[in-house]
Image (cartoon, rainbow, N blue to C red; front, side):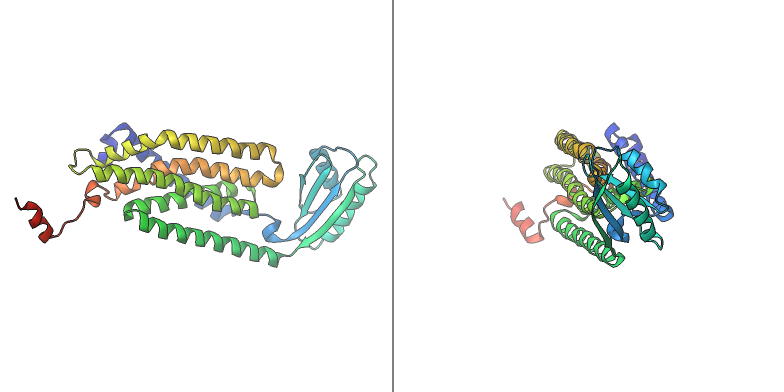
Length: 311
């Protein structure tokens, strides 16, 4: 089988190389996840959330440096507008003292003149429930996808789509673990969106492969050539769809601000790797498993065949 790939058409060799690259990236992502884990946000870990406004426009970096001088613990400052900010603090024994210190500093400074709008504590129990519910939703979505693929496709094409889907999720999680980007509820929601988008790409390619295999009753073309033709016929549509979606997500990434940055990064990465995996995994793995036109031949029993052979 390896010699067939290496000596085959250029498209076949590229698909095989892409699948090997995907396998390496998955192993690296799993290794990163086991070593560094995910940087869970306050939505899951709990902590203090404080919103405040300033009397005049203040640069985020300058304000962050000023608060750091009066805050000994870990915190995350995000800008909700020109003079509207949100500060998140991890739960710790000294958090209450730290909150009083930095709040007094920003409210008493004449250049900042901040006014605290709200301050609330998010319990870790709520975060645990949100994480469990989010994981349950993802698990339910995966089960629904597997049932749908089992009904729609022959098992080789269905397995290729499932493996491509798992590949996309692992690579996105691996990127968040490697860069230690905050993993919060919006990122979890983006993973659910990636499941749908990745599945859509794989189904488009799988449908075209199935159609070409059904009409290939005389076995003139090899399965590799049929799959290459299927990818070529859907590549333009896939690239246009992915390109327009990436442009929209990139706009959210660059213009929507910090609260949606993690969501945009996850979705952007998911679309890129989803397009890649629909070609290199969803279409290539079934070929490795022996997919051919024979799998879609109409089976005729002996009695019916006798009737067909009669003059």
